[in-house]
Length: 340
Image: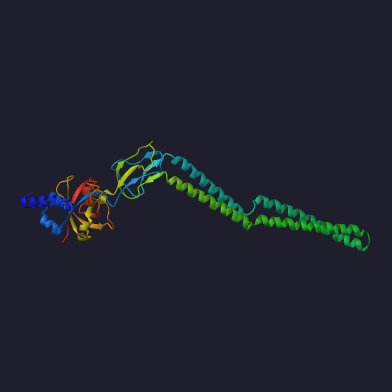
C-alpha cells in the first residue's frame, strides 16, 4: 500500500460521521484500488456467491418419516426427479389401487344400465308374453265358436260374457307384460344419471388418492445439485425442518450488497470485478438484476445497530464463467462495479 493511499484511509477512519465511507474505502484498498479513482469510477461492496437464482430447502410435512433417500450429497438432479420417498407411500399406493378398482366397477355398472336388463331376463319375459299370446289365440277361437252357438241358442249368454271378460283380462295382462319387456330393453334416464354420477365420484376419489400418493414423493422443483443432506431414512421431519438443500450450481451468481447511496450509479449491464479468499486471482462479471427494495445486510452483519449495516440493495451479477464457481456456494467476496 503506498503512502498516499494509507494517508487517505487514516483520514477517513478518523471521521466518525463518515463510518460508511471508511468501510467502503477499506474494501477498495483490500481490492487494490486507488481511492481517488474508486470514488469517481467504481462502486465497491461486499458480496456472496450463491447457486443460480436461488437455493431452496426441500421439505416435507411436519412429522413425516423418511422411508427412502434417492440422492447423495453433490448429486445432480433433473427437474421433477424424486429426492426422497416418505414411509407411508405404500399405504397411499394401496389406497390408489383400491380407488381405481372402484372406478372400474362403477364404469361396468354404468354399461349395464345403458344396455338395459340382462339378456336372460329379456328372453324370459319374451317367453311369458309368447305363452300369454298363445292362450289369447285359443280364447279367440273359442269366442268365434261361441258366436255361432249363441245365434242358435246352444250356449247361455252368461257363459259367452264370461269368456269375453277372460279374454279382455288376458289382453290387458299381455299389454302389461309387453311394457315390462320394453323397460327391460331400454334404460331409464334417472338410472343412467345415477350411474354416471357414481362413475364421476369414483374418479374423483381416485384423483384424490393419486394426489395423496404424490405428496409422499419429494421432488426437485428445478434442475440443480444436492448441496447437503439434512435428514436420513428413519428420521422424522420436524416443523420448519428440511430433507436436503438444492441449488442451481450450473448458473452461479454473485449477490452484491450495494449501499443505497451508491445505488443511483449502478445500472444493469455494467461490468464488475470479483475477488475473494476462496479462490485465486479475480474474475469478471456483469450486473443482470438490481433489487427493487432496500433491506438489511445479509452478507456481513458487522454491527446490527449501525445505519451502514442496514441500508443496502442486493445486486445480482452473472460471472463470466459460472461453472467455475460451482463448489463455492456462500463464499464471501469483494465486488467492484465499474461505473462510468
